[in-house]
Amino acid sequence: MKKSIFAFTIASNDSVINALKKIDSNKVNNLFVIDSEERLLGVLPESVLRQCIINGGSIFDSISSVYLRKVVSIKNTCLIEDAIELINSHSITFLPIVDSDDHLVNIVTKQQLSYILLQDIHSDLNYDFSSIDENEFNNSILLASMGVRKPKLPNTTSKNSAILIYS
Image 1: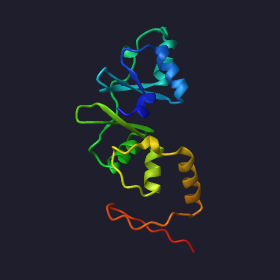
Image 2: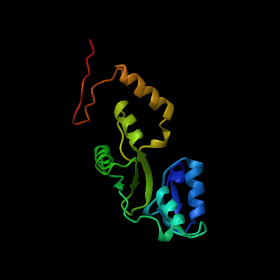
Image 3: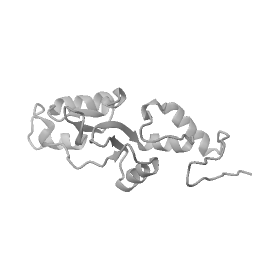
Image 4: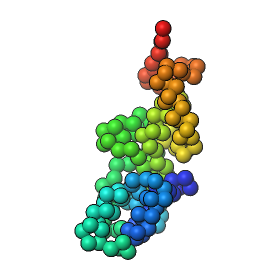
């Protein structure tokens, strides 16, 4: 597992309080639950932790009884287009990427996929998405909204290409 995705994971036997601390310190709404071999087991939304405490659970309880075992994920051998389809069809913002043995190997966000498309970066799901600078992404979105694009050669590996002409 890449070190950069560690901020989005938690061990299945960890406590509610540790999950809350990790969510708070990393400014995320969900954690991906992994076992000792880093296989993806589920997802732990902040709202589930809140509900656990409201229902009388202790902050020292294990998350093993509360995390959601049904998690949308994608294999690292799939295409970027497949990841986009999953994110859009399930209305999620983070997508865990697993290998053939369900080990968590990467995580991609909706924002990172948008950047990849906007910058016409040729990549697969093994790309280091954490290398995308959020400020650079925001600047690209701003420039694109004003019609400013980096000059590019046509994308010959993509199924669909669009040419924008401004007069």
